[in-house]
Amino acid sequence: QVQLVESGGGLVQPGGSLRLSCAVTGFISDYYAIGWFRQVPGKEREGVSCIKMRDGSTYYTDSVKGRFTISRDNAKKTVYLQMNSLASEDTAVYYCAATLSTSVGYCQRVRMKYWGRGALVTVSS
Image 1 (tube, helix red, strand yellow):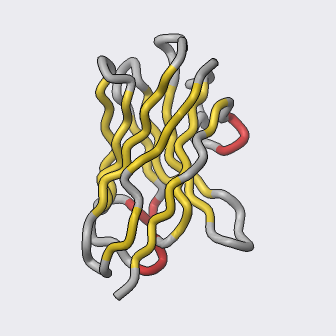
Image 2: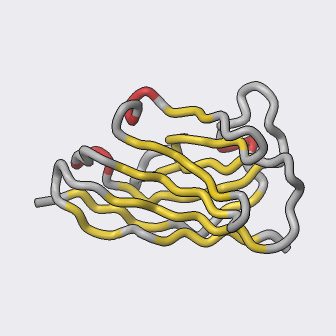
């Protein structure tokens, strides 16, 4: 059974940084991708960033480009999301998810098969 566990959420001031981690346990194909999604109450869960574990190619939504960096450690089956220059609008529950489908358009909520429980990120002074 594949499980994903997020860690690293918390409270940070505007302009600050946080790093989220997503650890994958259980057997999973080498050809998979991990994505970070976020959700605030009353809104749909949106894709933030994704990475293909095989070749490291990445995707970022426009609102986080230049501020967030996704990376991976294949040996540890762990993906990181480094978040810099955080703003109040980044406040959300952040979920990591995994998909075995890495074709075009893979970084979408509907393409994800496995989900973590989420980590709350609060950006506030």
